[in-house]
Amino acid sequence: MIGYIDSKEKESRFQFTYENGMLTIYFNDSLPFDDTRRSLENEIKTTQPFLMGKNAMTNENVVFFVDEAPFATKHEIGWTSSSYCVDYYLALKQSAEPTSFEKLVFEFPELDVFFDLSHGYRSEYNEKSFSFRTIPWEKTKQRFSFIVNEKDISCEITVSQTFRSYSNTPLILKSRLGCEFETTSDISLIMGIYATIKRLFCFLCFRKNVNIGAIGLYGKYVDGRRSKIGELFILFDNEMSTESDKVIQKIVEYKYVRRQLSLLAQLVANDKLYFEHIPNSDYESHHLTVARIILNTAAFEWTFSQLYEGLLLSERRAKVKDDILSALDDISVQKGYNSKSKSELKRYIKIISSVDYSLSEKIRHAFIECDTILSDFVKNIRQINSMKEEEYYQIAERIQAQRNAFAHGNIDREIDDDTVMDAVVLEWLNYAITLKCAGYNDNEIFNIINRVFGRRFADRN
Image 1 (tube, rainbow, N blue to C red):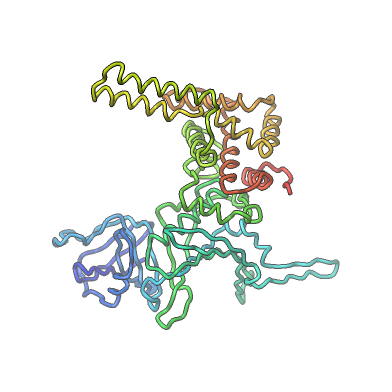
Image 2: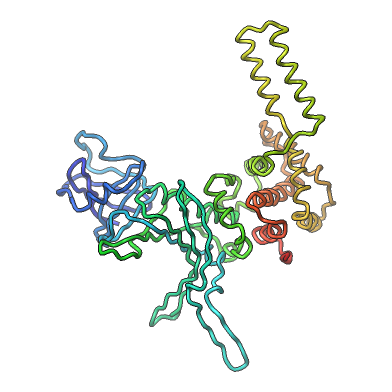
């Protein structure tokens, strides 16, 4: 992309080139400032530095969101060019109203599998003929919603139809996800919606390299028409996905999550779902590392605290804990501690106060709660690998021992067959308790885990 960047600070226009996430501005041979885009620049609400310009090839207005503001200083520019990293940018049609957004539209390969394209057509076969009939996109609508930045986001999934004459594929069906909201110029809201949708599908795919390309921006033209006014291009966490069609097919379909999809999306929007343990790609999901084991246990403890927040210690353990805390309180008086000693004592009181269940006890408790969901999966994978059945407490204690060893620097500890199996089962358990947080029942959770981890069991009704 080539064009001109406007700088109201310098009252000038400068030539730029953009390629592969890098914006280069050339400061020689500047032109007079184009005042027609000043209103657009003033409308944008964001705390991130940005640059306003025009694409010379398409005549579109372009807004680059960069890592630093090149024209912030009042000093004269003493170099001929400079390059800046672009996190994301907007390409807006010239006749659109200044940054008046009211809808985002997503299209990407995983969405076509999530919302099966068969929603958009009906076909019939017989011995003599084959008929194919599309269904109006309005009749394919399915809705869910969530809240970002205290703003209601209404989402609608449909199967769109595009007809191309003189083509070998005259009819193209695509699943589309539209997110509508009150008209806004707030870029943080736009990015919050994107982050929610991206992370939601990372969870549904169990991999982070869900590549969302151009996102449609919808709003008003200057004549009042409502339509597509431009596109949003995200660069900072989008890598070109090279996953095969077979891998892309490994996603939880809409029919399995539809009942509680709004609540699941809201958990994502509220940062109530842990994502760090999700592998970057399908390849990484088949390779176990020390870091992944630690992150899996961190994900479990995070989610466990969300689901079992009110889980109390047994009466016996609670009494012992109270007795210890009471004794520590008495020590201060008995020993005549000064302020420094009291401060040191408070550190130990805080440690004792935070003691609850151990990791192995938490895992055992969650396994028992999720037994109807996971028992068939666990028995099946151990049989496939010629491993004898074990009690949940054995798996739980082994996971805790392995986590503690790695966390204390024993990273040369052998990752044996039991460790690999424990890590796989713990990932299923993480999904189970996460989906319980979202209000899904045991049969729904079984079907979701069965789908995303490719366990090949028959669905439960």
